[in-house]
Image (cartoon, rainbow, N blue to C red; front, side, top):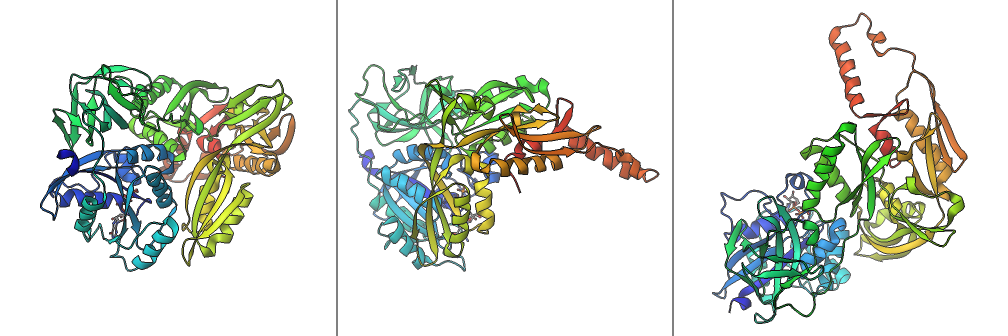
Length: 598
Ligand code: GTP
């Protein structure tokens, strides 16, 4: 029976431990793609992704494997994004599998995202097959890593395959273990259709393409499907699999992983995690776990050239078609004019969107410092949800403020434990536990305000641990904090886009820092410009930018022409990223200065 020969699995790993390389090897070994077609890292299809070396969009590939037992097996390899911002998507793609190949770097051992991904796999009841990769490296210490997997994760690693995805060692062993240990899908082909949407992408010809895993029943073209979270109905136009190119099929049945198109125009209707059933023979209940993904980090995006506002909206609408987690709405800033308030799953998600807007749509943007979502309990008893510091109410109307906290796992060699604790304490962290991963490495757990992580925690962590720390976090809820809004005044005018929320204890220090930083970033003007930081009506820091005296070209008087031209070019370059705030020219960097303070 077909169902018994199916094996659905994912590869999970910490970033850079070799997931994509292993996936490529598996495709090669099973001749899913010929060597000629083999392009490095086929599963990561977006250019940006390739450059950044991270996997953002999920994908699934069907391949056939002729096992040593003489039988032919159908494998579905489901790709997962590796980053914490996308943990819900990781979890949904794991829910489409029965097994997970856990790749751990033989020189690095378990890192923060190894653990985060393993927990997601365990939550989804997957069979976990550990693989110790990069055994070709001189620094490889497979036995130490085997011990770590057993001690830290608590799974049997005695049969962990020792592999080198790069050198092609151990690949067949991995494939054999998948046949032997990953269970075939269960589920009833006669039952009403139940299929999990684990990804969806927008295709301009076919509309939304849903990536699904069929859990029960069958789906074929002509069927009218229903999305169980919102009861929307669509007629199926095509079903198929990726191999890795799209191949049409007559139907998809229990255990299959493939795609469905149904002329769906709006990707917002098809959230990842939803269940598809048939309109005329619906399943009683949806598959477990459908959850809306809510943005955690917000920032303002403004075109430098204000006439590009419409283009920015169109670009955001296009990106939204492929990214149901992206949110945006129009907003106006006194300082920056018309723009959009955008919500992201996390910092990486934000970076990726900004970069795509600039690169793919050729937009020059001013981005304001990211903010988390605050809960403000007002004196009138109501609660206000605030994602933009500029909207923070007057202190007299505030009873209390709550902010999101996360639990962070930080893994470091033990020499750096002190440094990690110092940073975490300074960032208002609350120590939870500390466990030894092995003789040399420690997992330090802290509860931290998300706003501090958004601020500069990661940069600080990297620099004070020489890059050895790995880090992962999950939201644990809201807690009251003593927070105030800091406003920045340029030339005695409040610049709304520079406002930020800060803990009262750090307010003076941060006010001082930002004022000094702005003084360095904002070029001299024709007149003296005071810069002030204020809480309510109270000025906590002040400095002045001295008026400009000399003409830039004066110092090259009589000098050679090319030098003069260079100077002018340089000035023009600088201008491009400037924004006039009242009568003051402010460079883009200034808006991010609230963030990076060294
Ligand atoms: P992300 O896509 O960023 O999540 O990383 P990944 O886990 O997919 O890692 P990737 O396959 O891109 O590999 C990361 C780096 O490790 C690349 O430079 C690979 O060439 C290298 N690499 C992968 N496997 C091996 C191996 O077995 N041995 C050695 N020496 N290098 C390897």
